[in-house]
Image (cartoon, rainbow, N blue to C red; front, side, top):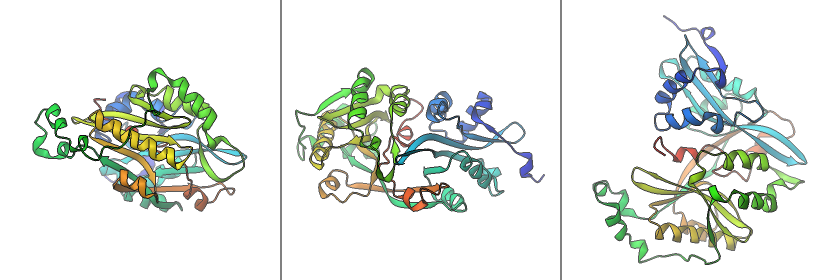
Length: 347
């Protein structure tokens, strides 16, 4: 039997039976199916602007999914609504029939501004709608304890391996006494004050388009996060980094998901302090979730391993061109779903 596209129906995620969602997520995203199933309303920010992921169904079975995260963008004195494209997946047997193009078109009709980090297959679809890409984004890391990454030591006691972490003896960066380490689940008011006082993204007359992180965004992204128990703040004066601390497959990972620096000196001091704290607390790897191409040699010395990401975007608004949107300069790991990808079903 030949499948016809007109036999597929499209619905918002809130209209879908929860059992169907869990069945689909288990096939499409097995490493985070439980996380998506339990938290999709928060992850996709369905409370904002009435934009919801689009689900394709065939004979009461989910065959395609186009997730999204709503956000705000600012340019000059204007504020626009945009969406991140995330969790784009079509079941294998329903590919190459044009379903991806239809889902993308329906996605794009929701807002004028579209952003994503994607793979090559998704990019091929998006480029059919005049999207453009930027390859100057990276996911960067610093391995703390190299022994933990050798397959034959996985069965050994972690406490024993930690004693042989040579970074504890050599190459120990400075931890400044002026840097505070704060658990965010008990101190969200500190972050609220920092965002209100230091967020230069909120200032008008910008020459470039930026992600807007306002009080409403902060309430959703941090205060209501199901992962807030994993969030910590490294703070010195008005410079700070938000990190997420998780343990996956017996490895302790620290992800830097958002930072705001008053100067390059504070930037170096904060990152050196994060690294030192990680060494002292048996963290196995430090990730910088989103790193736009860095030219600072001192910064490169900290995060030596870099993995190129593909950022793609599209603007349907005549005020902001594709090229302007491509060079948006304040994207960080907290904006898309890169932080959520660090968790697994046991988190």
